[in-house]
Picture 1 (cartoon, rainbow, N blue to C red):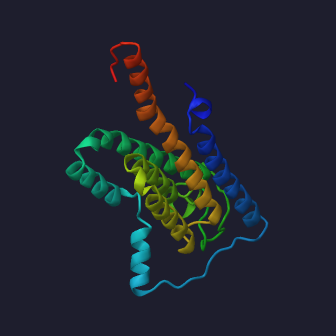
Picture 2: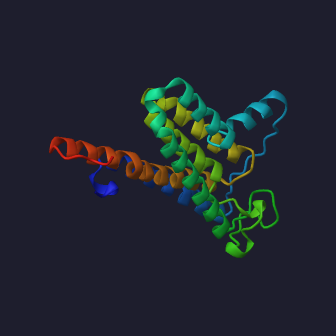
Length: 215
């Protein structure tokens, strides 16, 4: 089965991925044309600490605590913890690998915004594109939305806050953020279909025809 064409939500998923990807391309074009839109904000006190907290949505500690709570409070969804964590790990590692290959310089550094390639992508200051935090945040939101659909809006708001805080704190260019969101959304939704939805479809079809399924 082709996720991109036959899944009932395929059109929406493709539209979201394309919209985020196009936003990344538009912002990248503007940045390369000399319009980087880099914010100059001063973060202090409680506001700085709260922003730093929100910017960790989807990262190791946050995801670990969330999955522990699912295990403790929701027995019916325990079997989905390992697939969800696996998808988040794959998404994060894929984004990290892409950052190494692209080698874009972060804002505020020498040669900021330049694409140096894989040979110069080994240091954090040269790992701006795509935003790994944004990719992980949106992937985490996708996973949690699948587990608890009624809270989907909350998860998405947290993911977008995390992503744009990475821009506002000058850790990334705006194009990095949109690229990370597109990257993380596309990978996580594809993997969720592969690991969960496809297996559910196979099980349902098998049950309809009286066939024993290994899933």
